[in-house]
Length: 315
Image (cartoon, rainbow, N blue to C red; front, side):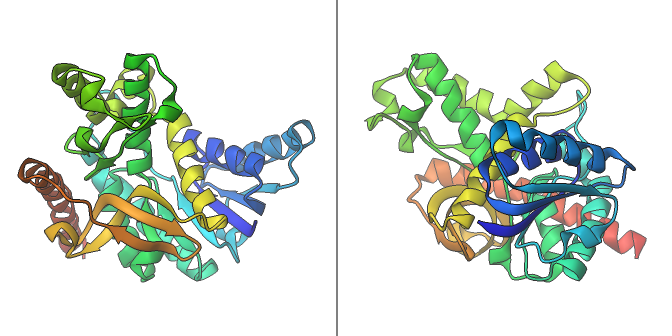
């Protein structure tokens, strides 16, 4: 158990995450920060008052100031505007870049030893912003994307086959967007290759649905985006860190030549433990899969380049 985990942003993702963290008792204290007066305080108090019912002793507090995150070992950034129908993650670029930059300045000031997990969209580009704004080493700055994308992919397979989600193992690489790269070749159901359980056409339909999983939910909600599965995905990452499980999970990490990609945040498999990103795992890819991953990385690079141009204009 850690001393403190902080969540920046008290919207649906942030508040649900704070609740899940408290219930899992991964830290003695959970702090929630948001600019909206009363919102983090009210939600924090509500979660705290749930403790006797669920039986957790985590202390939850909400605030409009960043001093509450002091001494945090992990800080999760969920702050930013959410997607609306017809809006891509990329449309969020400029506004959320300013928000994440401000947040990271405060993390650097109040929690300089913390690991930073980015959830704000467009996620891969926001990881670049966080790395630059904090100046932290890359093993301490990474993003939640692959765990969520893989969960969607696995849940769709389990639904189609009418089997337990626990029997479905698979992962998604690449940027968090419609160029992500689910890998059916590495997907199994109770150890059986997916290709033996499902036709190629059906697999392709599931792959396409996984790529557009977030947009599908946005279209239903109309005034917001997903928060149950994203928050659950962050908890899975934090649990691996806190308990030093060293789970192999897909995360958005800073690559330094792996997969032929350099100085870019892209979702790949990593070993996640108490030191954060402890190892980047390179799996063998076919030429077609390499091309898909390159296409995804190129899409992330376009966002990073756009960010650099925005910075140059506003400088």
